[in-house]
Image (tube, rainbow, N blue to C red):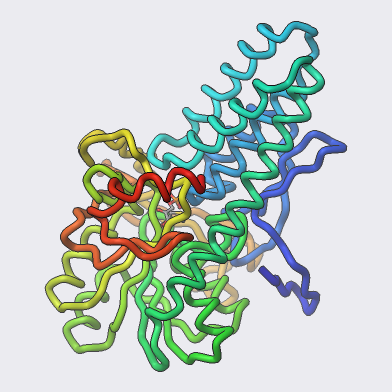
Length: 376
Ligand code: MRU
């Protein structure tokens, strides 16, 4: 998407690869919206660390980072034997997979890279194929998100008020976004609409990242506290809920997404508001038989017990330079916290899954496997 920083506008992807330096280049999402910075990870372990610490986050974005990370690790291999390279690639894959467990996209992206590599007959050929496959994954991810926009834009009528949760925008993908794709497409069609961004505690991806994206694109929006959605729905002030996902089970139609998504789906059903989930094809899991089997990431208690931000100019005490990043402890000092990062929404609460090849009922996905898997 176009990014304007200090009056200069440029097109930007959240994840790219610098082949000359064998580095993965990432927008440092933990600094947004206060600072726009691009960081380069020098090796695959640093790429895995950037995924784990959420320098890069969002299922399709970490998939691209993992695919590039695998290519990066493969290209750093100095041996001459193909079995040696295969063992090395497997180790790289395992390290990248362990970084974050809930999203299935990185697994699919790396499986694709491994499959493409195996056609090479020399180490050099396999290294080149690994990078080509990672680049292809990233390009397809952008094409997928653009297609999601084409299918989903019709759901946003002129004057609509849309609620979204977390950040399923271009930052969470390589470009365009999943839940935001229909918004950007509707904007291009000249529709006017307003977006409520759930703050999305504990890491506040809605308040920081989605709000920044929408502000950059000139889309009318407001941040709301996570607990405000029910009130707005009850007053008839929300017409549509649009979210992304980290894993959609084709066998059951269950959707794993950022913690708090399930709560919003229950509320939407109570108020008869359509609840849609937008996903690229890499998010579909055709294997797991139950949402209970989805590995739900548990993150550090510190995320719940406090909050990150920057020192405000008008703050009560000027202990640090305005604009400096800070973590403040909010909770009672002697209390601990539980921090599940995702939840699972059942299919009966979901009006439709917006994919690059059309909108489907959640329980329809398995029947459409031919179409959905072939395009992946
Ligand atoms: O923990 P995060 O920020 O990586 O989680 C991302 C999400 O859950 C998003 O809401 C999203 O829908 C999935 S990525 C498009």
